[in-house]
Image (tube, rainbow, N blue to C red; front, side, top):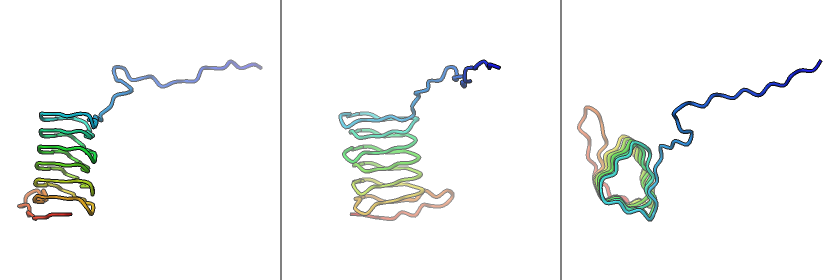
Length: 136
């Protein structure tokens, strides 16, 4: 007549793994770094970096500046870069100021972006065509 209530089942927690593990790093506007930055994760830069930046995915804030080479699988740039950029998927937003050569597989440039350098698509097995371009 009366049924006994059972506790709801809960999934076991994985052992040895933090539930709050993050693969995203942020350099705030108050950060100034002198030296190369290597990140195995995604990176958001709002501060200033004097050195090369290498990461999986880069998001650059509007007021930030990078003085060095940028290497990333994907990059979304809206600040100033003074150096060579090498990215598979590259988005250059209208507030970006690029001073250096750009190598890419996929490229999007918003109207208003300023680029002073050469564009060279990365094409496997073929010589990349170099295009001189100055967007403003």
